[in-house]
Image (tube, rainbow, N blue to C red; front, side, top):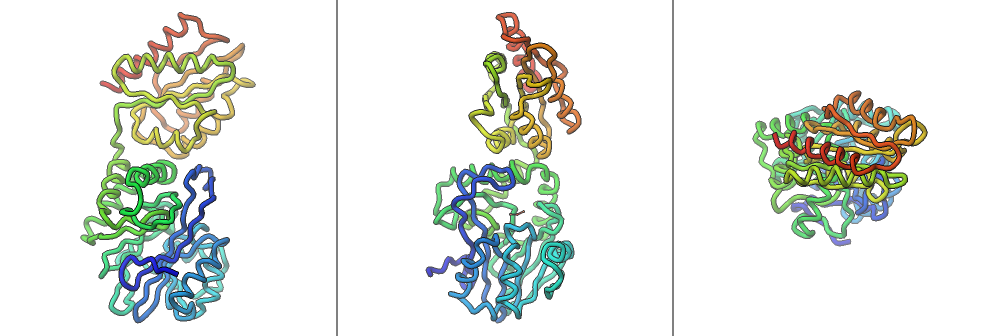
Length: 394
Ligand code: FEO
């Protein structure tokens, strides 16, 4: 096995999940990786494990570097099962190892796998001497579970950030200078929009806290995807922008259509928005997915959502999209709604109710058309789009 080294004695022993396409409802078009790191010093530490189905591969990689019985510590930065479900089998192989986790991590390990483990808890600022090397821990609660923490290798200036700064990106390459930069940033943005978006304020505070701790970071080694070694400040700056809600004067229209009426309305609204010089993108849910839609929404100023009425309610694709979107809680955006119906209506009303319940800012007007839009209806749609554009311009 060719060692994949982050620094002398620090090796990647993770696995590549080439074929995963759905990660708890996030469409992972490029697969993913579960990264684990082995640190050899006078004491040996394994940072994180991998998804259970890959546990043999993890153990095989470790064994080619060091006998598992020589592992002294297994650091559990996060107990979500993509990182911890190999822990029971790993702990059996590394039976001399002590597990290190945050207090909430310890609780979650016991709640997932029982209490048959030797676990020591750490908190922010605690250090663990491995020999020449020191590990320092930074709790990162709700980034994105209560138990989450970062492990920092002091002498090598490597931040093992678990889910933060990751990407669902399967590749035979491990480092940022080995892959196409625009693909890497695209995947990092998709990941942020679909996992970390609701935690924007916590992320901003954590970035500030880490900056104040004055810990220099030369490498960011997340638990998914590519390792940032050439210029970690690039992803830190991107997180800073995304978490502070920096948005472009851009509108995203997300809609679906049954017999083409809502489609015609979407196009007229798009023309109204574009007439004000505002960039606008149309996403039909039959041709896109919620993961792509949320990524487009991340840095947009307004979102306009359209649905035909089916059985007195919104179209199922819109129901799914809005359930996902309201859960991710994008901040500081204007939301507008439109739709079509045959007799009783209900789609637009239902969508507005969902948005208001989620605390979204909803544009005071909406547009509804019975059956097929006529010219006068399309003019109304154009005007609706124009007004939304004017509002975000202001
Ligand atoms: Fe990659 Fe929250 O697990």
